[in-house]
Length: 80
Image (cartoon, rainbow, N blue to C red):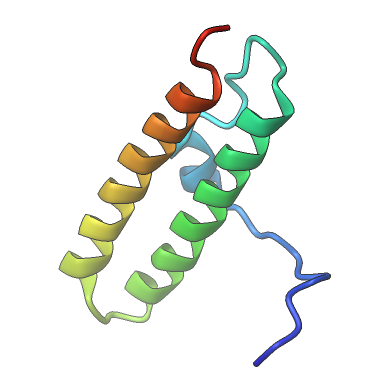
């Protein structure tokens, strides 16, 4: 297994837009981390799709990640 402690996080412009990375009016660090993780996942999915494999499955995964990120941000900001 690879050491991920110092793994670089790549985020495509499309992935950044999908999770609205720059939209964080409260400047909440947790919200930012959740969005970065979601954008990194979407970027990796885009790379799989660009290889020409599993396009439908990747599109579904991206949609679900967008939904998961939205709910995670909602939970992280509940009561604020």
